[in-house]
Image (cartoon, rainbow, N blue to C red; front, side, top):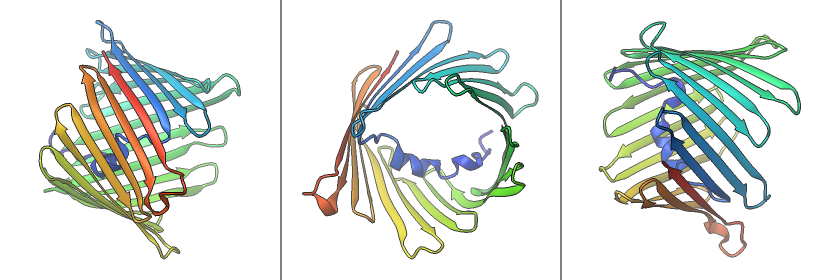
Amino acid sequence: MATVPPKYDDLGKESRDVFGKGYGPGFVKLDVKTTTKKGVEFKTNGSSNNETGKIFGSLDTKYKCKDYGITLTEKWTTDNVLSSDITVEDQIAKGLKMEFDTSFAPNTGKKSAKIKSAYKRDHFHGTADVDFDFAGPTVQASGVVSYEGWVAGYQAAYDTSKSKLIANNFSLGYRSDDFQVHSAVNDASRFSGSIYHQISKNLEAAAQLNWTTGNSNTTFQVGCKYDLDKDTCVRAKVNNSSHLGLAYTQKLRPGIKATLSAHVDTKNLNSGGHKLGLGIDMEA
């Protein structure tokens, strides 16, 4: 289904990835992913905050029953939160994905449950989620339609405990093979726009604008990602506050890569406040 548009939350994702992926200033991170012969995936994440010294970690276990279109996921974090996720895709109907997500914190006794659904077909991608709460569930729905590269989407969320609409968002954009343009209006008060351009097979560039009513300032940032070769890539980004982000990723050997990243306040080079980060990714 090549003509299926992305879901609402993924509109403009390519641009956001240019600014988000590969950066981790202020943290030391270790990600390890392994897969057994029977297809069970184990993923361990660990990070240390250089400023506070707080360490966070999680363990994910995922098993896919491909014959039945079912994916089972279990997750445990160092905050002592246990979560389970069951996903069924293309079984009840072609293009329909159902997901049931629960979490439990033994220390506090807090429980949560979510039911998520997504339906996609040519030129349409819709979602409907229910977040259960003792006070009353929150319902969120979205829909994206496309036509000859143009995409338009709407997203709304309703809090039944307060009988109040808590999200009212609209997005419009254009997508092609090598560039994408998106704009969005959130709650009629926050405006954003993004441009993504695949300049060549090795170079990606993006720009983002954000403005909020009642504020005379517009935030702006540009960034790029360049693959030096199949094992090495560099990233750079800068915003209108003169904050510079840099990242260097090197594949050390098959299944192992290291990333060095930095955040520099170019207006105050001598006053400190700059951040460095290190990330190690391992996969087997």
